[in-house]
Length: 79
Image 1: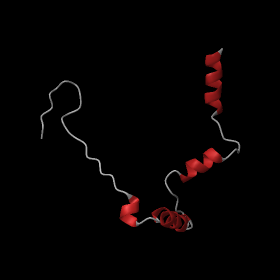
Image 2: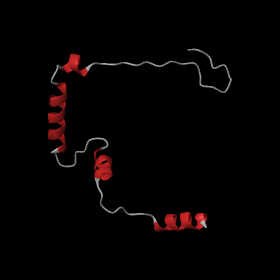
Image 3: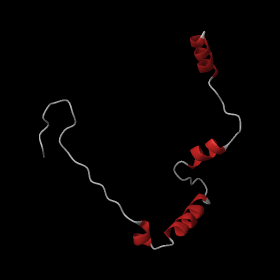
């Protein structure tokens, strides 16, 4: 292992990136297969995909709860 040179920056190290083609690994219809798999998963009780709730919230135009105390603090700062 490389020794830190004590210049305040990160210690000597490296990165490893691995890129894989889903079309090569799983075939040309991988996207349709994945979508079907995700649909089955989300059909199970209590199962969510990462970001699913956040995405639904962003699409929703329903009223959102706000922190009244924070709003008042912001208003006082604007005066």
